[in-house]
Image 1: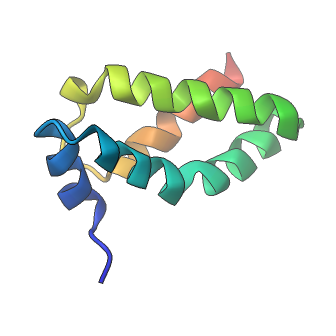
Image 2: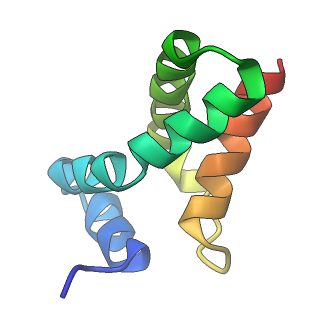
Amino acid sequence: MPEDDAEVLKRVLAGDEGAFATLVRRYEAKLGVYVAQIIGSAEDARDLVQEAFVRVWCNLDQYNPRFRFSTWLFRIAHNLAID
């Protein structure tokens, strides 16, 4: 049974950088479709998705585990897309 996001995030926050790749694989395709729908370009969406994951990585200390990780990730991507 796959780990849920909270379990993966615990590993990431404990220093397991490889666990972050699990989150990237889990969400990059869905996030790409979401962002492409907003901006109308699949190519530009790939860049924004990458930037969203970079921002997540750099701001993990600001993540509030009371909320779903996917909500936080998609909000970051959404904000990048509308900027």
